[in-house]
Image (cartoon, rainbow, N blue to C red; front, side, top):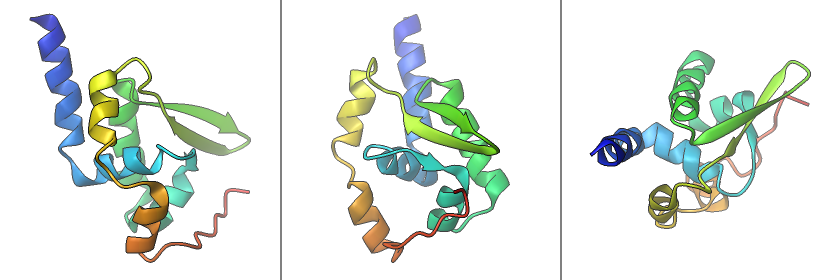
Length: 108
């Protein structure tokens, strides 16, 4: 039953539009928090809060480069999460729909 409880907790995270969008973006490449702020048009604390929740459930991992933190998808051991993400659009499609094809990052 613990496995079902853990799976339910992880799937609950995916029910949030912003978190699911973040995971869908991360399917193709890693992103810096500042890039996600620009893409999603929400505050840096809000993006960081979503990423914190995803990281706490092992769905994303972070790597620090200087003062910037980059996030990447970490679901290789979670086939049910990968299956859900197979049904979401790729980052190119998401960026096009959000009219964000040319995100200019200040993270460089």
